[in-house]
Length: 278
Image (cartoon, rainbow, N blue to C red; front, top):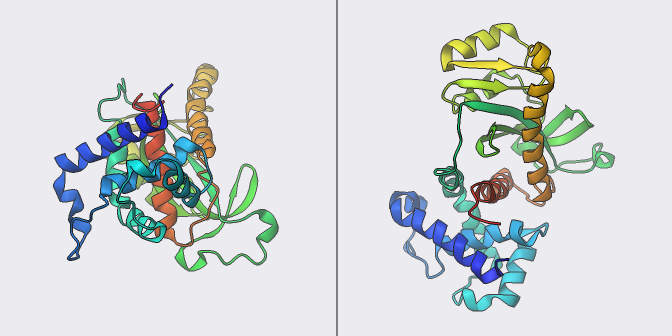
């Protein structure tokens, strides 16, 4: 079993190598302190350790690192600086999600699509919730009932790797045309297994022509329904993996912060899928 120091090293090398190969990714920074002593690779490494430790917040992660592995980060900045810079690196984290599975075997063009609610509060607080309403949080309904917050729309390869994700207000339907066009454009042709919520025949025909995709739900599968349903369980496994990383336990107070943290959890998931982390 790898030690924490080994895991820190693996993550740091992965992130640092990517930033070294793509120096243009750091151009988001516009200040005199263009090359801070505490590097971007170190910031992202600590952020990813939240999923390694299995703790609910980034503050807990930061404190664990500072108290137990501070010698690995001799120039560790304050928590406030760490959090601000981590959210500023959200775009790079998105690129790292793709880099993590760049060499992961993904045979065939068979994809899965689904959505997952990201609630801002427990149902008992629906009558007075205000968190992130100005930033798009809204009421939506899932298979488990009403929630207030956002929806995470996922495109997953049947091998398990997350290919693309989109965060929308909770009232956006899974079959929303804008959502489907945005998500499925990343598939590059092939077959997409979906649930019974994607039955608009005209929209399916449009997607097939525009993106070379065929959407299949269990009802269409006929005598292969059991097989299709079993393959679709892969995305439930993905959702479960994200749940284990506290993806739907919200502590962020802004959309940018929420999206940044969710992407970190998906990046860790992809690193594990690719066998780069245990």
